[in-house]
Length: 317
Length: 149
Image 1 (tube, rainbow over the protein chains, first blue to last red):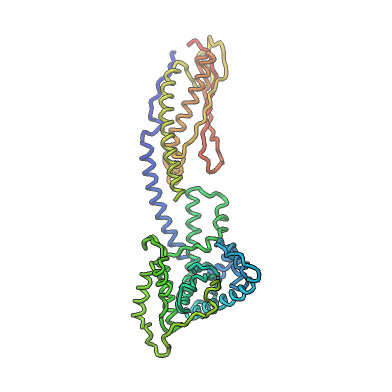
Image 2 (image 1 turned 90 degrees about the horizontal axis):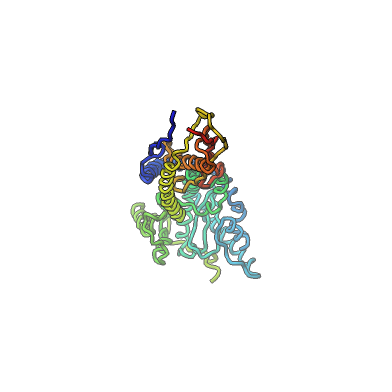
């Protein structure tokens, strides 16, 4: 018997299909399925997260930002910096000698003024019972205010300086309260965490420590992204709160007008921006003002803006 | 955003160099297979007619080939939906044929012309290590004989 090594025909074990073609089909198919699944998840979480009990939300907030509940504008600048640091936010400059005590007195005063205002607005907004608003006052010239889980609202001095009257400030505070009332922070946080976990499971980035990593990131608390729909919802709710609390809607557009005037608005087109453009918000609020007879038709109320208390004006001037 | 750019760069790198290497390797495999055509290999444990076999020695060929990033990425996508992982099929084909060729090369060096009881072993070098691109090892071995066929 004679043996010989035959030449093996090619292309049996190796596919002749171009690898790029294979790759593109796979990529398109998988990403289409993925996007569909993520969309479903996104809406499902939005629906479910609203039913998380508020007490549970408070516990989450404490577990992420431990110092959240300790101060609401009472202590000195060190305490405030401690809170900011714990949340991953920029801190204020170190105080000079003898400055801290004076500072603490004022911070407490402004803090309790804001807390008081928030409480009154919460009543006007008919905030459901278990939900409590905790206001944190931050003495920094940043024009910003935000709400996060557990009913915590942060208000910066820069924002107080940007509005002209208490009405303008109340509009912003009521807007943040409306976020909390409609459970936007917990929805946004759940969405962020949920989608983050799913995405990292799929892409394989992250590994075992992933969930603890994500949950331990304190800046999650301070950078919640609300949708434009949620912002608009809160605007409308806040405006109605103003109508109820002051009897008129004057001053509601102060902050937006200031943002437009000072050119602080981002140059991104509205599509790419989570917040509606200030100009649009002003227009919508003005339209609401016309239709809701906010233009001071109630004889019972006098149509004047409530001034901001003097101590709330900038301290460092 | 940077992650996407890095991902794209890695994919491009993996695709360009991986494909170049694969094409070159296949050309070389086909060429050397015809060079070693006169070394006969059998899966049987014993030669069919063993009169005249003067020597019997262990011969083996070992090869490790790395997966490139592109192949791994495509395979990861494949993992989600199932089907032929064609990017790995060609990799293993190369590894098997290369290992057999190296075994034959060793046999020729030892002056042997027949290999019986040929076996292949496969191992994944980076087994269990996550986030590593990974490499595959194939070891081919058998009993080399000097036969008067």
